[in-house]
Image (cartoon, rainbow, N blue to C red; front, side, top):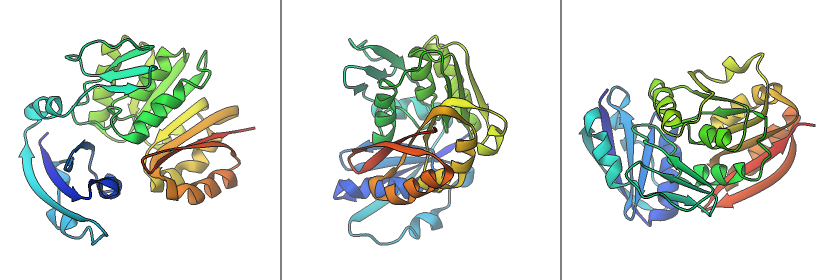
Length: 273
């Protein structure tokens, strides 16, 4: 499977980069690597459409982009150049196998390949951090839109009894399985699917780090699949999306618990009474 890499130069870098990443996340782009000048976005070659990039629109920031084709076998070289270890306070280190081991509570090895979720993005960082405040012991956990499987792996390492990871992308499922094996995180079930596959399944904790539109659409099914007394953690959207998402969650029956923000991105926590 070949990929197209699109390098974006953004001025100012923030919040312009986050705005564009949010848009591209709805347009089949699978992975993003941020840098000092902007970011790189990666998409399967079959899905790439240059006309879509030309019609992104005008904003109150400047941006330029250039395109390069990337053979799958060259991906490791690409991400190794741009993948420093991620420290989630003193709780967790998300790193590649070639990085030094850090003195933290959990040391997680992630070889992301083409999947999204290395911990570098603020939403993944916040979700990773939030897991340490939850009682995972013996819980049944769902990682919806699992990407690299990092959240599922952390949940399992923190004591979750049963963990399920779901993603719409075959490559993400393959990568998640590999990463779980790297971390000796046994007993995690990864499979390709979407919210319709949750019918009849129930969880104590649901983690959904996806984009706003998917969350709004899938929220009713999340509620059906949350056990009484269970929790829902949402991220993947901007802080100014709070009102719309909160209205939907409360309408479904969730009780709002808390909101956390980081660099304009948000994480929301709910419970089902």
